[in-house]
Length: 130
Image (cartoon, rainbow, N blue to C red; front, side, top):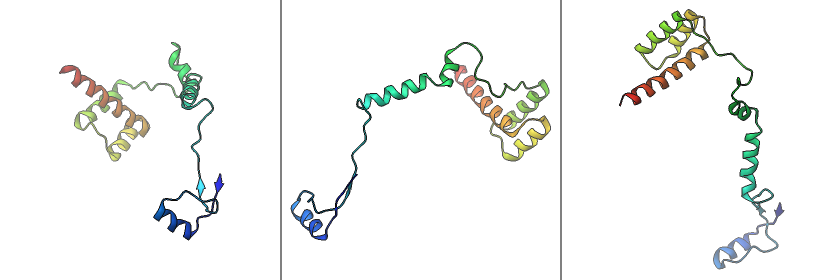
């Protein structure tokens, strides 16, 4: 970075006459950083990083996804209670989420995710019906 000193005289002069920055002035000038090869290189770099990521590899192959939490298989009783609660109100509150988690022996995040997924299913169903 290049530093130059601003003087009161220079500021007054430059505002009146539109003079260029003198060598005796201070300012911090920043030049935009461009990657080697221009702006297209940024796009190519990001794209290459995405294609070499484990997530992309998991998405592109037909086998199982990356190891992690296994998919939750809800029992019929759990689904019945979740659906009943969804019919009453499609957005779950904190108290109801805690109650359902305790009753159904699930985590609150599982309850939240189920409701999010169920709202999307409901949205698709209503859009398909039109």
